[in-house]
Image (cartoon, rainbow, N blue to C red; front, side, top):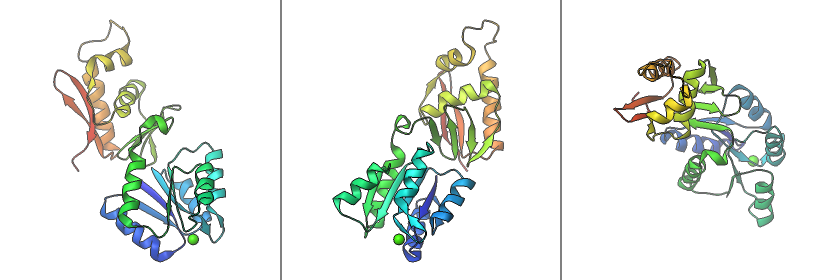
Length: 225
Ligand code: CA
């Protein structure tokens, strides 16, 4: 999980980075909207923590721009503006959550976890698991924000698995989706594609892999690294 922290208070930013690192998140700090835009251009983030009062502008306009560019990344606002109308303005601009400063680090981490747990249907068109992501519309697959090439059938297998990570997907369901009713396909064909996909994920340094549930199907799980 990779997070972007947009916060100009250096001391607070340091504490937040530290707290999330202890929980095995990677956090990139940005001290201005300029820095934040540069970071967004260079990497894909699972979520953003956003301060509102920044040296080069207002976090709310940054958030509105983000949503206008159809970026559905979850955003949690961190702000000293704690009045009801401030919170509403933040949520109306497209924030997913709002935490007033000062806050307890444990609450911030818990809220971020809750945000990241939301079912993929609320974060349209993009499925993520570990450092692996798949865009439902473009069918692009990424590891740590870097696009990897996958042949059509491997991609079809992954598409089913990443929709229900850490859960068993029945062999018959994958067979149907990947091969349709193609009678030319041998009984071991699916194994071959899964094997290739597993290898490809490993090469791309994905932190997830495909576990075979013997006689049942497959499951996308965190890799032992
Ligand atoms: Ca500030």
